[in-house]
Length: 66
Image (tube, rainbow, N blue to C red; front, side, top):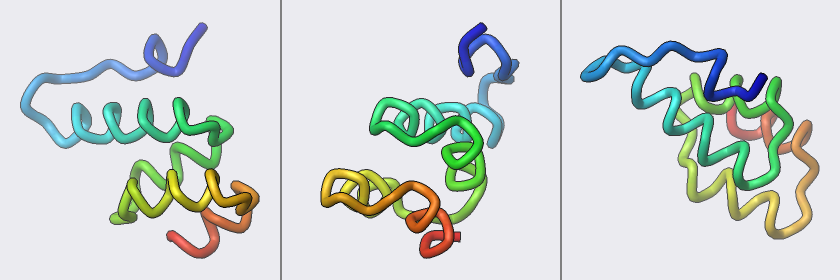
């Protein structure tokens, strides 16, 4: 089962935005549990993705971003 199958998205709701944020974070390489925390936070996705690309560990990134 994929993360996309776990989340039931209601169009036009914040859940739709959170699901998209989760997708971006998973594609960037974040583990599911960390991606969920960041997706629900008011963190900048560009910064989150850049952190991983520059070698920041996901567990460190989530502490900085949330």
